Image (cartoon, rainbow, N blue to C red; front, side, top):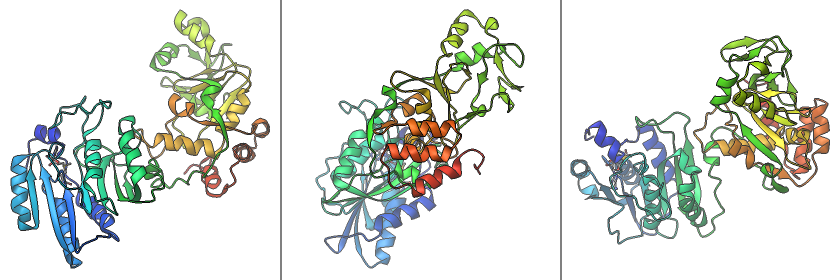
Length: 448
Ligand SMILES: C[S@@+](CC[C@H](N)C(=O)[O-])C[C@H]1O[C@@H](n2cnc3c(N)ncnc32)[C@H](O)[C@@H]1O
């Protein structure tokens, strides 16, 4: 491998693929590969030291197939060394693959671990001026290029990509283009940041298809986490954001409250995430920590708060639903009388009209709501152990077409399982099996 200075490596995105991932990606991309001629045409447009090409060539040759391999590398010394290393088995082009006048679009396989970078975070090796997509990542542009280079029938693309590309807005066009022309053959994701670059990556193999069926992008991550599939259809009526104002508290509120919480006095109870279980608030029955102190039954001393935080705390004393953060499934509890102050970082939902806090809490206490939130989390620097509960994710949750009254009743009687079943009925979900089992296994008290 050609050694490069750290700055140079960062600038060109030269983080090489570890051997285990080379093996996985090459095996997946050559599995049942169909080619129209006896010679397999393969290209790596960001070939670096040529490790992906070398692995493809040796695998295909071991199968008795002829290979026509092309690599492109922007860094001249690396390109020269790779040319020497691969000898006559590959043609190495020295230059910028994104500017190169590619005359062919008949490759059987485009394989690459392209550079990842954002034009705003660092200067990449090329000027990134894609119209309408100012944040487009270099990896997205290589993905676009791959779509141009593969042949129209059964051509394959095998890429290592930053995980964020599965859901980022900037990559939406290339995702749409891919799902309308290709099918996803294989995917891989690891929760551990790969390479020295410390970026969480995924890897995907697509094949051009006359009959594309759409791609579940976040499934690349959620399948790997063992999450059950989403139901094929939901009967919905808008979103939760149309029925509730959703608010998260921030650091300011934390510092505003710290020092004004006591175990005595008569102020409103402070509800931390740790006190919330589905449909239940354990205030006064379970100790909890806030601002590095343990409390038996924390109350907010309203007189101690500064004017600003007094106004804020008072504004939270409305009928609402509180949702815990950092949990495996959604944990929500209703406060219909508006008597609690949410701690930081508890999220609160205030019903707008025609719905009750109990109905909102019931919706959130269901397998489908938790599973949808996991899909949301999948693109956002996911932690494999807990859900990212935020305003954006909650806002997008669908509201069911059917009523939630019965589910809310069940939740009020402490029957969590029945609440989940009744929410599914409101969405007209018929496939209960794996989704319900997964949810019940991860309800608090049963978490591994
Ligand atoms: C992440 S490394 C991957 C190298 C190798 N294919 C692997 O899998 O380990 C990306 C390589 O692409 C090169 N590169 C960056 N921008 C490029 C561009 N616009 N055209 C061609 N190569 C480029 C970098 O110099 C680096 O060697």
